[in-house]
Length: 80
Image 1 (cartoon, helix red, strand yellow):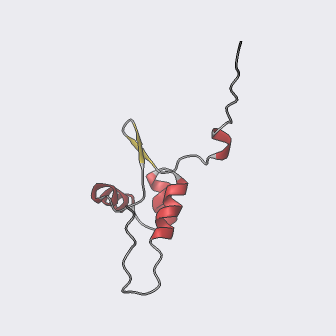
Image 2 (spheres, one colour):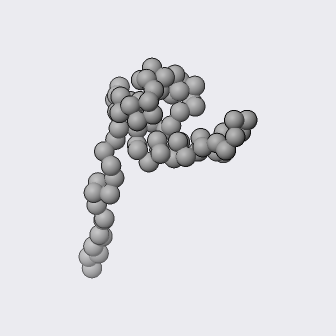
Image 3 (cartoon, rainbow, N blue to C red):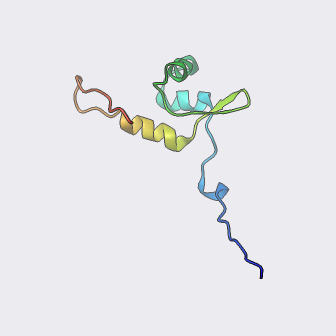
């Protein structure tokens, strides 16, 4: 008896990974600010493929949404 497995294509539903330059432009900041956030662990999640850094747009959007404030004295939510 043989069984067949159907695998849905993942690549068609994902956006291409973003470079630090693209994310910096979207956030209106610099690549060095993103590098500092990566070092401190305060920025959006990122991926390293070899020596290159990439961002998943879904992670960037989630990080922006997480940092939405109502008042100037609000504190960012901490995800556990």
